[in-house]
Length: 488
Image (cartoon, rainbow, N blue to C red; front, side):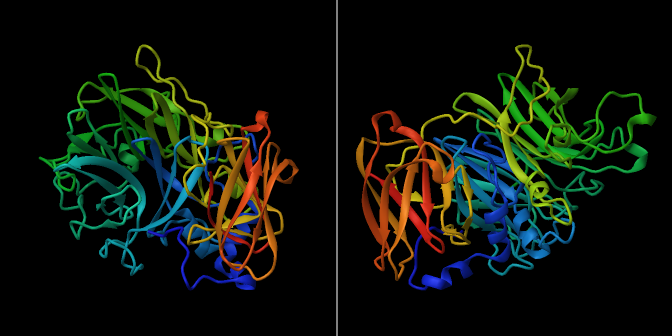
């Protein structure tokens, strides 16, 4: 994993901008979302196939690293995922301000830093945690393209992760899996009794588009890195890909993306490329098809279409759905398509346990709590930004004077407080400006931090009584690299 810590080899002065790649600079300048938009949750970096882990008071969001493919193609080649060997991971306590924890290096055939030396790719992760022998363990299940599923294990939600098996957990040699078209897209669920289950598979051929029977489910071993018994065949109608699983009350919901086959030859009302759902009173089924719940992103105004991939989760007693949509590439006007971003919206469940058609929005979800700045905050923690890039060290680098990040609904400790800022030392006198209230550089200035060759500075802040809870803007001079900050 990358870290937000500084080191003795960090660039200074005019060398700072070299720490951003060409595409990171491009995203810093062009990938903008508006103040009223909480979607996409991350605009400065492409990511897809979200998986969510709720651990204690924090949501961890994992994703296929579409940005890795974009760095290779520069948007001039369609995204075919073949260069992706890592996963993104972000976290939030409020579902609006997100911290970038860097990339988990997964597949090692083309990436010597990666954990799974045998794997070609890392797509569509699933995540879970479980207390084993008195210690919380964290598991990432990933698709090695369409050939099988691997597993990594760590002692923290952000790693480091290791490969305990040195091979695929699910492969073509796994019983009842040899004929699965696409052996990928895992979903994992740990039940109330501690037993865990994995769901996976996808694909079809023209002869069985309506009932491909290419989904599988099986109970995981107590160690979470083995399976019990043989996988069972599932039959989601018009299955394409993207297994999902969640439980509400005593009902298990298996969710999946329907295929793109033209329905004119079939007697069905199941739309193409939506999230369908099936229910059961048993985690291994049998499951019964009930309908569909999430439309294709292309059906929403201002969105672009594409494949669907989702994760349903509960946080602070409310239900949400994470998914992806190729909206930022539309803003960037990339030459070729298929580069996706992460979204979260509320997820409704009817009183009769059926699922309504969910809303896809750019507004996203409401912030579930105010942001507490009392701890040291990694620089790459914010809701939205302008002209600021996030480096591979998870630092912020301003590509223009007045570049900014916004942290929404910050709860200041008092009207008079102090901020401590860590940054890459600078040779000349520059200032980091803090503002509250309005978008970008138009807010109310509450303090300035003079930057120096020391790399750590402090400044006093003055906040009006009616602004003790307000949006905070960190406004950076050009070529400034911010590492972390803290308000006391």
